[in-house]
Length: 143
Image (cartoon, rainbow, N blue to C red; front, side):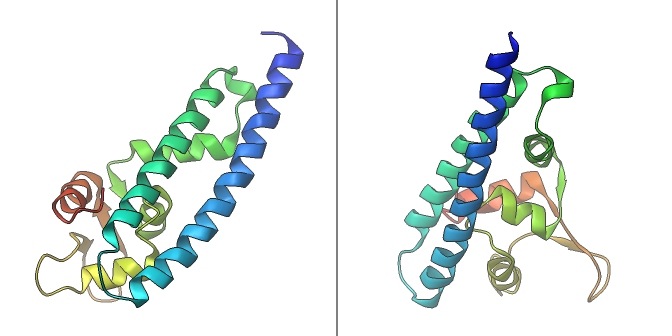
């Protein structure tokens, strides 16, 4: 691949990362509004998550076109998060747009069908197992 093509791909990745950041901020605001009013909010959240995942998959594909030393570190981090078996609350929020940190607190605190998580003691670090969260989201129409 010639230098101009590499430069063009890198610029496109930077541009798409800026768009992604704006979308994440907008989704966070939308989730706050959606969660403030009870009703059938799941369809919008589900669509937001699917859209963001498709967007990130395309970013990863573009990044993989480049040589290792030319790749974007932020996209590499997104790829690592998607491939992880264990997730922190922050990583879960980045991976699923409808799972903001405040939403996670609500879902974990449910009496019936809470969000599955691991915590060794109260006020200690919370960890999610990606496979369990995926199953929970499917059962709760969130994915």
